[in-house]
Image (cartoon, rainbow, N blue to C red; front, side, top):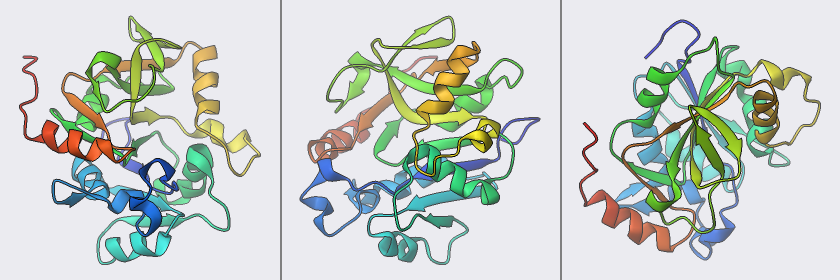
Length: 232
């Protein structure tokens, strides 16, 4: 995947408490909950194969995630004493990820279809974009509870609408340097990108399932047994 100004590094978010997954998360971090015989984290890691640098952050029951990834080439960024949210977690991991734009990927979703990171790579234009988010129409967001996140118009994203953020993106990280907060959301970078007209989106053509709640496990397993829609 490497290219000029295109990332060869990925941050996988796995530090959350997984409160919506209780009681499963009473003894297990959400990323290690199995779906179709494979932990959620491993489903996500399969999508990142071929990238030179892979970082997983951890906080809740971090020791289990560290043990799970022992002996692999995946770095673990343990956040303590406090959890740092997506922006703070990404900033903490920059010494490993490097200075350029990076992929980020949530670990509480399952995909059926083309590799989302490859789609982002193919659509990425660093001259016109500070962030490129992969979204899916609300009607195709299996397991989604609640409304959409964005409106996607001619490649530009705006807040509010029926497009759901899938948890996969490419984002430039330079702006993190001037954020003094230790714990903060990546929404800060997104708002800056939107203000500059550089906040962009892409619609995912396959199937996507939110596995942030127990019911999502069954839905994801049913989805994985189905066939992704043919968009050719």
